Image (cartoon, rainbow, N blue to C red; front, top):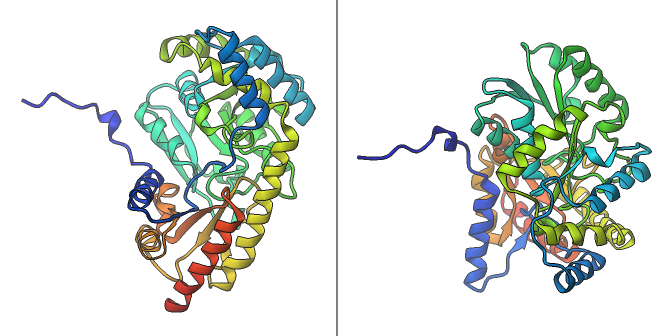
Length: 385
């Protein structure tokens, strides 16, 4: 007799993790792999964050904190919103979480019932879709493309049947595109008039090129904002994120957090306080991303890969490779096998059209980007469409 497995597990795999595993297998055999698949900075946590962690280890028990996080860090994040967005946020509205992933799970649980309909743009971060599905929430796939710079618009929402929620990301993963302030305001106005819950993924704020990111919380106090120390603050492995919540969601989310994981890692919270003292170091990271971005934006078209999403922010280039293949997963596998270049197939981000796209991450070293273009030049010479 086979004991059942919950149907909630019937979700798509995160294909980039499979690419990472295949790349690690090659490295275990002594081969060198160029990592353009990984959506994380190659730089370590900033120095002041590491020093703060050491001080905490030496002087603190590092037991459980409050489920919502230590007060000092919540106040520091509040000050961050005042400095960056000129928006005064009550620290009580800041909830520390187990990464942005934990923040999304808490937000989805607190905001939506089983069977609710939530719009998720495609291409988009796959864990939105998969987490919602696992929670019994209906995902309404909204196809966005070059005509809207891979972002949703209020006119697109007008064409949908009744919905309960909308997830947006600016800058977006995988495209790096951003919502202009007036576009964000249009979506907010639509959600206000239709009483739709807005979830705004802002984890790539701070990593922008020529544009400034607007926070949804500056325009609507009923928006739910998700952010993280992973990307701009270069602390992926520390697993620390945060939520900015409307007043009526603070207590519900706190109760969920208490029962889901008790509290975010205490050492990470103390380290995060130090991260806020390292902004000069973090801006140097952004300068490195900008160099890498420029190399790819200039180099890929020379190889025949010229249809690129506007990379306004984050550290990704989303490239249309349909001139070369109808199966981006196969193409990514061949690049890894023949040239030791790891990239992410677009099927992670778009179930309908992702087979035409590859995502390149430029969060690594400039030397790796330069070498990647050299190796892909060899490939392009052999595979002219």
